[in-house]
Length: 239
Image (cartoon, rainbow, N blue to C red; front, top):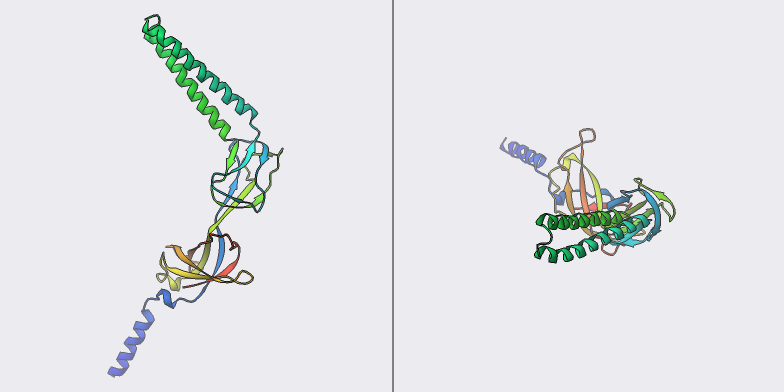
């Protein structure tokens, strides 16, 4: 009797024992870019130069596109001239103020004119800066639609993918909820012709289980410093 009781308790313990990472089977995952950014423009205009082509590697801050900006450049020059004139006027009138030939009110008006001119210059420079589009990420150009002379606006005409690091997305059965933790080291195994096993780690574990499928999402971050690994492949993730 005691023997059967002990065996029953052992089976119950095994049945309800939590699954640890070492007991997890391999999971199938999909490799995706870390970020996929579609570039458009805040101000509609005509493309003057497009400095990148599909497949080009770009760095954060690199100029991608310039729009025609003759009007904006002229506005900057006019604003700069107003600031220069205001400063020269202020220097001349400083001596007049010291000699009490102009009032404090007139002096204040001159200083205010300079401040307004500087604000107008800053606004003109900002408008000009909007005509130049720079990359916000390190990545690779995956799509280019626009060409010099074409009209562009809010619709994205240039797409850049950040592929270092890569994301590996997993859909995991709720049976393994709690066994996968953020920071867990894993190996990502890629099929041929790429092949190989690569170290990675878990960075996101969804805390909401999908009721319909009984699954939850897991994201693994896969370093790709030499950009040799492509996105879009299916792989296996081994814990």
